[in-house]
Structure formats: structure tokens, C-alpha cells
Amino acid sequence: MSFTILCSFVFAFYVVIWFFDSFFKSCMHYPYYAFLEGTGLKVGILNLTWTTAAFNRCIYRWSKNLNRVLRKWFTFGYYLTVGLFLPFVIWTLASFIIEHLNETIHVSGVPEVKAMLPGVNIPASDFWLYFLAIASSSIFHELGHAMAASHEDVQVLAVGVHIFAIIPIAFVHLNTEHLNSLPAMKRLKIYCAGVWHNLVLAFIAMSLFFTAPVLFSIAYETDIGVRVTDFSSDSPLKDARGLDKDDVIRTINGCDIKDSYDWSYCLHVAHDRFGICTSAEFIAQNDEIMMETLKESGVVECCRKDDLYSFCFEYMEPKLVVDSVLPGQYSCLKPRDMVKEKLIKCTEVGGYACPRNMHCLKPSLNNHTYFIIIERKDNNAVLFLGLPYDIYKTVFVDQYFPRLGIFSFFSPSQFEKLLRYIFIFTMGIGFLNIIPCYGTDGHHIARNLIQMLAKALNKNGEFVTFCTVLTVIIGTGVTIPILVYLFYKAIYLDELDY
Image (cartoon, rainbow, N blue to C red):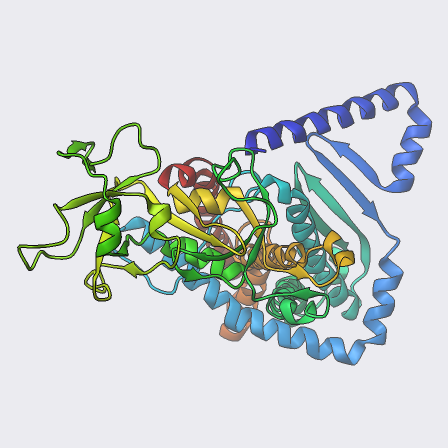
């Protein structure tokens, strides 16, 4: 399902919700308004809002029962957020801007910054994981604000969730009079608590992600390959002579695969061109080269047009003797027969060297086609001509093998994927909220830091106002164009650049 189709479904959903909301407001005026007020629901254009005060007492009780722990917790969070994470975000933004303003500059070690959209660079089938990851990250962020506020005796008026299109955003309503009456340091602890909780959630998600194979080892076996679970509708490998569901893939072009990481890595290195070491005897017995070779689109053709199972291979070794076994520079051979027993690769890095009495033959292909050999357990190898990305995008695999049939209904891979999304989105929420952009936590953090600085320098309120406005203008002016660029790049450019 593409991004356009997903947007169409979302738009249709909100049209239906809006229709029934308008209908009930006109036909069942008082009962419907009483229902909305009692549940805290509110229907808007492409958005839904739920507000409640039911958790206020619970949050207050937690904050008081854990008073001593929370004091140290939020103090440490304040120092880490302002002292480490804020400089990291500023450095990342500056590096991103420098790298994109001057393409000749390459800043090493800069984290990749990109927009994540279901149906674009996230499979649309993962929509529920996308939604759940953003919701949990946002709720944990706001829980930090609520707990910190209650700890400082700031009244929590209400909590809720606002869903705009497909993006859930949690929020907390605080008593602004109580909040503004606090010293700047205590206000900073409250404003930094959300970002601090995002960092904690990211650490938890990352820890669980890397320990998942151990946690699930009782019920699932790993490190024995990857299992094909499904194909996309346009997959070139799901037809006859391709892969089958439940195939166990062991290697790609001789690259050993034990888990999902190896699967991604081996498809990445599949872009490296290679030859196949082939015995001189095999070449002499099976070569079906035509008398003359033809060049079409820069590719040498030395096989018959009607031969669908043979390739033209180029002899990569230098001809050192006149009586070479090979009749010419090219040979027409069946690649399936060449790799039937064992694949021995020869590469440019290794000087196209092969064992004795063997020769390095490289497929004659254009620059946009790759020869990929996928070896399976208890089945013949699958030979594929195309892009490694087509395999990665259209073939879905799982590294977990259930020890008993009862465990086959659930795969820990879905749990790992959820953890990966939680890490990405919670770091993204923390990243955005530490930037002094208008309306974010960073706006309030910057203002309070400037107030503390002004007090230390004996400056008046005009200094605070000027510096705050200048900081927010710069932060907003940098953040908004970058966000627009990232979403534009994700929707329009990433597909074209590949």
C-alpha cells in the first residue's frame, strides 16, 4: 500500500467521522453534547482530541510517594538534557546544514536525519507499529512533564491525546500560575523532564532490542539463517524458479547469513561485482559461445538469442600463454551449472585469482544489473538478475525459528521492529523538543536559561526578552525549513535517488 493510498484511507476515515459528528450534533443535540463532555472527546478537521482528568490524582500520588527518588531523577535529567543532549543536537543541526550547503564537505560521524513516513520509507503494513511507537514516545514524554510538575506542587489540570491525521500527540495541561511562580531552576526541571524521559525510553528500547535474541531463546532458535515469511505483490522473486515461503536462506553471493543483520549486510555488499572460479575442464565441455560477439548497450552478447539459461562470461585473468584453454575472451555458459557444487568467488580486490586449473569468469552485465546467487537450505540456489534493493524491499524475512509449533503465531521480529521505531521516534521527539523552536519545550528551556543568565549578569527584563525572541526566531527559522526539506526528500527524492 503506497503513501497516496494510505492518505486516501485516512482522509476517508475523517470524512466519515466528521459526517456522523455533524449529524449527531444536529439531530441529537443535547445527548450527543453530553456524551462528548463526559468522555472528553472532540472531533475536528483531520483530528481527534481526548482529554481527561481521571489520572490527575494517580499522578499526584506517585509523585509524593516517590518524592526523594524523583528529586534526584529530575535533577539528573536536567543536567544531562542541558549539559549533553542540547550541545549534541546543536552540533548535529550545524553539521547537517554545513553538509547540505556545501556538498564537497563531508562531516564524518553525523547521525542520519530523515523523515519517516508509512508507505514511503516505512512499509504501510507497519502502520500500527508506527502509530504505537509515536503514541508511546509522546505519552512517556508528557508523563515526564506531569510527574515533574506534581513533584514541584504544580497542579495538573488534565492530560490527553490529540491525533492529527495519523500522528498521535499526548499533552498535559498545567496550572500556569503555579508554574510561573516557581524559581527558574525548578521550571527547567519540569520543561526538561519530557526530553529526559525520551532519552530514558530510547535507552530502554535499545537495550531490549539488543537482548531480544537472548530473551526469546527459550522459545525461538536464531543464528541459523533467515526464513522467508512473505513477498510484496510486485516481488520479482515470488514466481516460479524464485523463492518460496519458509525457505531458509543461508548465503547471498557467498556471504554467510545467520540473522537479519547479516541479511541486510549481505544485500548491501551484493553491489560488489565478482566472477566465478570455473574449472578449465568445465569450460571446455560446456562453452556454447557464438562465432562472433555483439555489443548491445555496452554489454557483450556471446550466447544465442533463444538461449534463456546461459550468460556471456568475460575471461578476467590475463592471458599469459598462447595455448590458453579458452578459445577467446568470452565464454557462453549456464551459471546454474557453474555454481551447482560450490561457489568460489574471484574479485578485483583479489586480482581475480582462482585455484589452480580454474579461471575467473565474470558475467557481462550493464552497470544497473547485478548477478545475485541466493543459496537455500535443502533446495537449489536461486539466481537473480537485478538490483539488491529489489530483494530487500520485496522479500520479507525473519531470523527467529520457533522451537515448537505453538510459538509460530508470533514472531519476536515484530517486537524488535516496534522497539526500533520507538527508539527512532522517541529520539526524534526529544530532538525536536530541545530545539528553541516556537511552542516547543526548547522555547521554554531557552527562556529560563536566559533568565538565569540575566540574573547572574544583573541584566533587566529587556535583555531576557530580546535574547529569548532572537533565540526562538533562529531556532524556528532553522527547524521549519529543515523539516519541510526532510519530508519533501522522503516523499519525492529518496525513491528517485536510488
